[in-house]
Image (cartoon, helix red, strand yellow):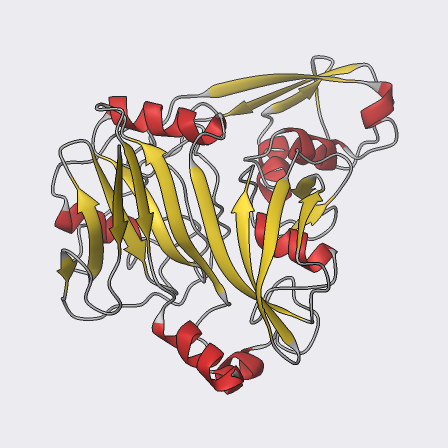
Length: 355
């Protein structure tokens, strides 16, 4: 048995209409399950990671670069700070950021507890598509950040959840990320599932990791995609020099995206994309890597529409990427749940203009 819910355009089921609030600050987010053991949520305990630097992977690399590549939740800037604070040792001696590795070194990295953030509940508009005692499904608007971090403490989905789901959120992901099982980029709109208790959180995370949960997006990409459908199987990891960006790199993690052409325009193509994996910025990186970047993507689109001016001309608030379908099994009942959300107003208006 399947429960199918389609989100109505505009005012959806359980839509909450408070004063509009949009936070314009951008942060690095992704749509993959949050690993509580690796993400070091705010208020977490000290963590020590030991790396054995093989000659094949490490020879000739800078220490800070190697650590940032091997420990995915640590940026290069954060690694350098840890090194400066004496938290990184190479063969039991304090490391230096610029030292070149030879291979076969033992590297020990200790991250201290992160001070808990004070995250306030805020009466931000929130469209709750579905909820029961174990979970909620949210239709996230474009321009909303998923959770606090990187200097952002208000205006996020978490701030809204703390208001609308008072005390009903799982604590697995820490103080700053209550109930957050997976994320969407700030400029990506669409469906997210939220856990209300730890049992539901773990079960939903496992479904995503096992690829049992189905996530399908609609995207408008620049250029005319020739093939009716295709699969992009390219590893994704941190960009070697631009640490806030991702890239197709041989040292990255497995990433697979399946796409299908829905409609072709003169200069653009509307596609449906199903994720087999959920790497940071996966669709945006993959489509750009084959020459069809997402329209309005300010990070990975180096063609005509990758600027704020182009966005305004097209009438877009964010980039043209929307998580329109989410399918998973209920963590308690086992019931198959499927939800769909129509394209947001700016996306629909743009497509009408192109037609």
